[in-house]
Amino acid sequence: MQQDAISLVGNEAVQKDLGLDEETAKKASDLATAYGEARREAMPRGAGFGGGRGQGGGERPSPEELQRRGEEMRAAIAKVTDEYKPKLAEIVSAEQLKRLDQIALQAQGVQALQGDELAKALDITDEQKEKLQEVNREYMTALREGGGFGQGGGAEARERMQTLGRERDEKALAVLTQEQKDKYTEMKGKEFDVAQLRGRGGFGGQGGRGQGGGRGQGGGENRPRRPQTEGA
Image (cartoon, rainbow, N blue to C red; front, side, top):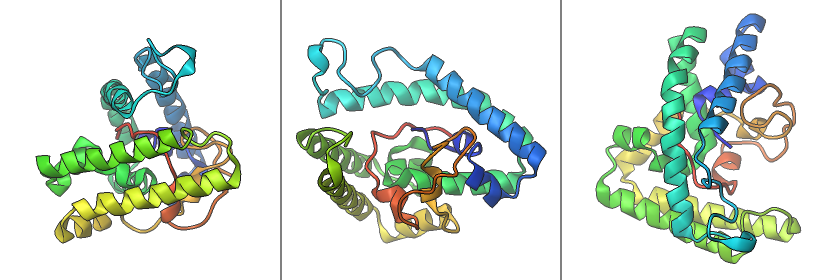
């Protein structure tokens, strides 16, 4: 699920954090809904994460295939995001937009490090980018060998995936210099309870009341997820 500023502005908990009044919150929710629909319409065929073209019977795609599909999705979403960013700026203030970006970074976790915008802000080198991609490939391989993205499987499977997520996060952060880590922490701003982004309403759209999961930023960074698609 997309976790960028435009999607998240439709979440009730995020709106409360931003201090949006009722009228502005309604506009924000409508924008997030329209943005989600535009994303889905722009998505390339075969760019999903299930069995793909040439992979009959629903066979799980390889980490390399997942990476390729992720790149296609990022390109498609980037185009839609460029269209909707100015619309978001018309609804919220510059300070609220900054806070949205902070919450988005917390929600995305270390996957955000592979996005062009954050990579540029942290001055991540080509060598570091390759190391981050390798960390993600290892994570995807471990997920694939363990039965995919965790649909079903019970508590034991979920715990295993959470462990893999924590290991991925530690390895990804270890790629950064201390200066980069400090700036990354600063860019995330005041801690937001990302568990509030789950449950009914999920990411984007109206809702957000179901507050399952533990408190704290770790819930967003350790929660296993498909390869991140970049947005606002």
